[in-house]
Image 1 (cartoon, rainbow, N blue to C red):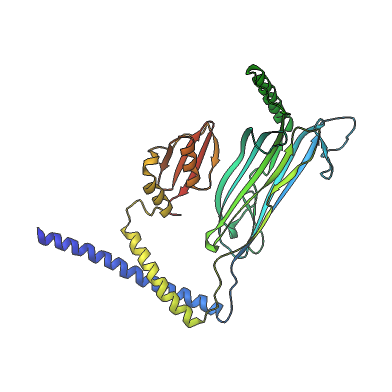
Image 2 (tube, rainbow, N blue to C red; image 1 turned 180 degrees about the horizontal axis):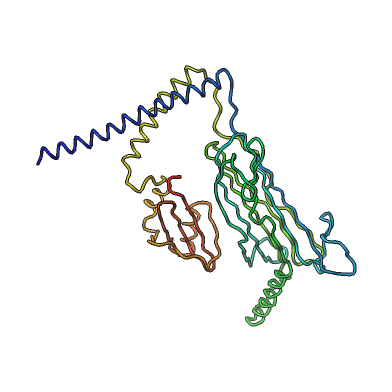
Amino acid sequence: MSSDIKDSEKKVIFKKASILVTSFSAAILAMIILASVFAVNNFGSSSAAPTASAQHNLEFFVFYQDNAIFDQNPISPHMDFLMSYTDYIEVQNRLAVNFSEETTVFYTYSVIKRLIIRPLGSDRIVFEEIFVLSDTYGQVETSRMIMGSLGNGENGTASIVASNGSYILDPKLHIETYRTFVIDQTRQMADENVVVQGFSGFTADLLIDFTYTIHAPDLGIREQLIAGYRMPLTTEVYSLLTTGISSFESVSDEIGWNVSLPVAIIFVFIFSGLVFGLLHFIKEMKCENGYISSEVSRILRKYERDIVSYPCPVDISNYKLMQVQNFDDLLKLSISQNKHIMSYKNDEFIEFIVVVDDFACTYRLDNGT
């Protein structure tokens, strides 16, 4: 029995060693070919660091109701506008992104409309109502971009366009909410015998924010743009003010090298051969479910007591969805609101959820990314 166990152990060790040697040899051969092609193409020349640039184009069109004074629609954007005549406002947006090299682009896109009410003369918010108009994410190759999702262009140009790039704002709908708030607050003060010396009322604004996150991991580029409009509601004469940043110029942290052919072959041969052989060996040692990203492992290990795992997807169809940028923000929310973090995991992704009132705040990670 002892001999059989030793033989079995030897077979396992031999199998692992064979996998390591085979993967190491294959990686070396592949990297020699790759290094040779790379070095020949770049011998004696320098390669600039990858770059990306973006321009967010926002437009709005104000439409008046039928009237005897103004006979054209939309009204010229160079004018101020009259709230009493306004029927609706159409906002259009488009983001054009240009990469210096072909790559895989991961993106998120969200549109949020907010009604905020403040005391006159103060920046403090006393009431806020949030509407999620759009919330999506995805990935695409710059060489395969198509109109409607990511637009195509020359020299790696990509244009991210919302599936519905046009949004309609009805300011009078939100003015009605503001009026209801003021009436109820005035009644509440009277009912509670509250007297505030110098209190002069409230003001309201309507905001629409467009948020894009662009991530090209192969180029070491990650950027975010947040832009939109702010519109005052408690005035007859108004205009739409631009908020946020409308463009970026990004240079990768990866610095181009000027290397000779022998140096490129030797460096890539040794370093890449060892790295790829070791990675392949580790991959074979993993469980059948495959590789789970270090970020997922870190979260599950560190916050095991704060997370409640569910075997089936959590139904959040009846909630307004809000995506957070990282798990730490979700953790802070769960602590501040005394809510537990729900999670569901399958072979493709893991999703963490915190439900607060009518909102479901989510943070999602794909396995192996």
